Length: 198
Image (cartoon, rainbow, N blue to C red; front, side, top):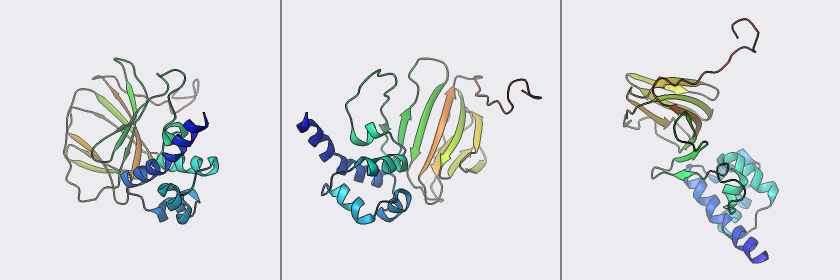
């Protein structure tokens, strides 16, 4: 058992470095976000220092991943709950939050830092999308509209409209996406049940 733990902890450093590079974050920026010194972060990434729980928690929060994902823990429990992230070639990471055929599908997207001059590659497909920004600034090109969405802002649109997502400016950006078949819209209740308008 100790050997398994040693191997798992030894693999954390390279994984931390890969996550940081995928998200285009400097050690200094990460130090500011986590409160861990740049020298400690550098030693963790190089495998010269073993991570502690006090270091892993803020790192997992900064990268928007679970502790299990950060240390690549073996899957346990119900696999329908333990969904693994999908790394895309452009540095984006997609985390499926649902895994059932039909109905509304939920995803968390983490897009790396982008350039404000990035040329959008607009796509279309069947369905309806509801997007909610968690962190960063999301650039959403929707038909002829070029929008910037900040944390707490949402957009809802028919995915047959040509669209594209990217991180604006310094990036990265994290957002939730609910995608349903045509006509299945996501609704958010603004007032408690029984209140006027509820």
